[in-house]
Length: 497
Image 1 (tube, rainbow, N blue to C red):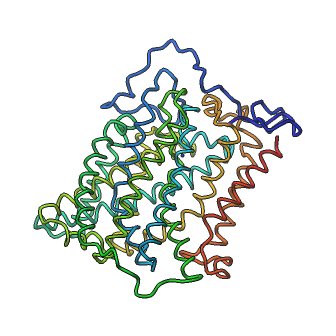
Image 2 (spheres, rainbow, N blue to C red):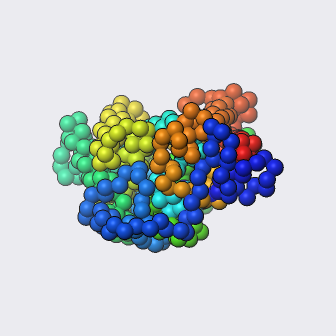
Image 3 (tube, rainbow, N blue to C red):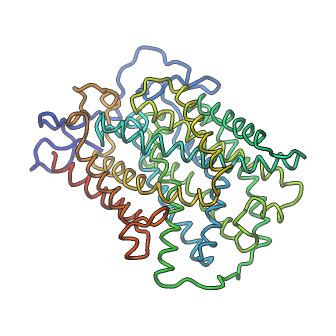
């Protein structure tokens, strides 16, 4: 997980007409329900089994198909995963009681509504998020945005999830009687990446077709895990020392930030909805996307919370195997690998589009391979050098400094434009583009993002402690960054009209 700005500052903000200010043209609008005439037969690349030929270019209406409900399995498969178990257990390890941890899991995952909102721009524009954000930052400004909040963060998440899959695969190798030496570990990481990138290279149609059976298989596996956890969980468990006052609020807000970093990382949700017909209900797109992310994340995260009362969740993979049936342990480990492959295929797919949107003239298939190579290097560092749990916590919390404000700006833009985007105009990168603004940069988007990021950085308390966090003892980076960015963008875009 809109209309243009009014011609004159004194008109009512129905945001539906073209702005006429020189050098700062407002985005062009096309009615998403009107299909441009096409005479050519649609290519068959959208069918499963063929490599997707589209990159960041506009998807013609004649090549669009499917229903919004297909988005549920796309997002569900990506969220029935090991990382949600780890994060759920981490909430209890941070000092929260069971009710508090469950509440944090639910509240943090409500940010999937934002992912769903961003996804509705895909069918309207027939373009991926990496292109739609030209409306917010301008043609040139968006290249910088994609380089950081699109490509760099996506590759970091790819590496983080890959590390989780690799650890599970190492255990499988040990069960087979092999010692996971460094060469074997490197080979395993590369093998997982090959499978992941194969899905990403084949692209959208394969993802939509493949992720329903993956969702069902992972749901079955985690049902067994859930049964074992519930059997051994201590529902009367309490923290040895209950948190109160400022310490409690600090833990709660840090937990919400940790959970919310998952849905916030998918500012690219339109990538997976852009092949839907323009007439697809925005409510359906929002609802199925949000539900697909929210439901499994809450269930698996909740299992992680309960698991902390039964086993040592500082090493959940090894600890959970002690309460699972012996025959199921290999299945459990395999499900962890499959789940992280599913989420990483989406991440690599979007990272490939982001690399194209940066301005590098490269085919989507090659850009995906570049992303994979960088992720392998980062993963090997995370596995062989740094502490995995510390890496998870620090990366997830720090990325919200960027992702919170960028999500807020995207959401406000959709609301201001009433989700009306012209995919053809968005694809125009020339100085005559409606999205060229001033020298290729939209000052409103750039200033709003800078203001949101700076505000969040002042309030963050993770790898470093900002001055506001030092004074309050609470990490307010997420709410402050999003609020400042949203308010600035709405104000500056209206003034610009």
